[in-house]
Length: 305
Image 1: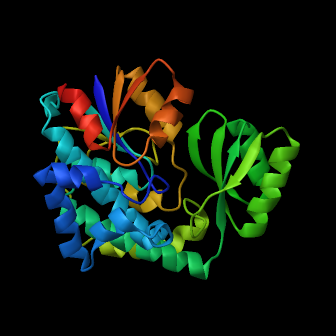
Image 2: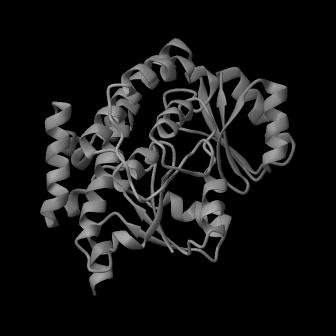
């Protein structure tokens, strides 16, 4: 069994997607369509930077979605791609939108419009309710849950064993980092994001996003998408919509999502889009699982050679 998985914010780099844009007309069409919808050259920003502009939430989210779907379209040209063999799609945070596009539940155009609005609302809410996120390495889930209770911050991402991201007000996260390090955490790394994503500080963004989401029609798909919120398959339109709203202020259950798919028989995961962050996480979740990266032309070339 096979699953398609997609990266989230943090996977971006200057030059992402450039080689597949030049090599595959299907990928070029994705970037060209994104430029048309957004009204500016996202393509130029992805290929030339600067990284400071690309990393801004409002740019980063549509950029990663576009680069991921461009990579998917390139992958589809390979003889080894068989849609019928795909059992699940899933994505880390923002990557869930790429997964919904890949499954056919969202068109690329609607996915891009949703992600652009999502990023605008998250950035706006971050200004109104300042906060930060930090990755805690080397400490277990239960220990961090207790630390969060003591410091009034929240679990944002359960990425893999001994890698948990916390989120909240600046002083709360800093206090939690100190406590985590004193209790044996190896490292505490602040993330380069503009706010306390996947925490209750984002509820304002979720409320406003809910109103915007009502304008869109979700399609049907034979390929279930794993929800970040539940770590379980979702196919009903209303359930998907509600989970997308909740996802903005709820923890991303990535480790649980991978374990669910593996327990159901998925042995190979295709990580589609920029970088290889998900491959590293999956190795720590279950080193016996196979992860194939699809983000560059050379990755496609390996499939056909």
